[in-house]
Length: 324
Image 1 (cartoon, rainbow, N blue to C red):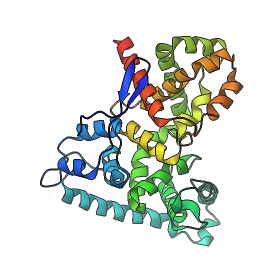
Image 2: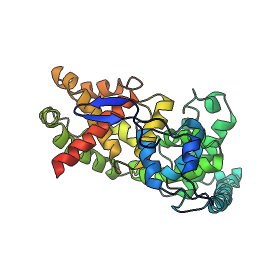
Image 3: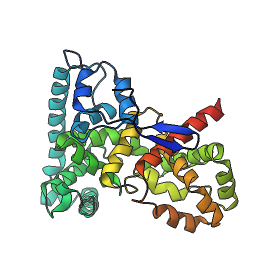
């Protein structure tokens, strides 16, 4: 099953072979008698090309996020999770025990709580667990974000983090596991939210380089139009395309990126692919920066995730071939 091909998405000359999602029977066939995953690389490849069935994401995403150590047994993973529950409650207690009198003298905490409260009520309200005002899901999202600010106090809370945390609650269906998954994701994403924005600028500069190699005609146009800073892609990279697809499609795109099959820059190759597919509109209409920004923002919720993954994969392959 791991090698069977499904839908072919044509992306220029390189077809991206979509497979069927990983189902429980297949996943359990990879486990030995102690619950060890025999071949993590196979799991990652299948997650990249096929994705994970919704009912299995809670388990598989912990592997994709690096929550579980390679070679760990089922018993070791259960013990690890219990330890994480204790850690979470301890972290949560650090802010939950702050009295009103203390809070009145704790400006940083008041500011962070205010920003989190403002963002939580605007995050993924179309999802059932967040739909109702004051729902358990919204309260859990608030607790996860507040707890993270005490786990990573120097980074604090920044707008956009709620976009990254909410899918974890939907997938994990458990507050502690969601926090753990969010923490692991933020380990990879922390540089996006640093105040000096060096992390984001570094990625945009790298995107410029990838575009120059993979889409030289578009790169030449953007350079002449004084648009080669690629700031119009800022939102894509900041929150991993979270607002560019319907929620269920976001999870599938994230699985491909989290798999690591195409390396840690897959999110950049997706950007190259999207821009490449739309380059004739950009160049043909002689768009400037404001026009391009409006255009790419208008792509939100209208892009086919299969096409985007196919184009991104083709850009990756093309870059590797041209870099040899």
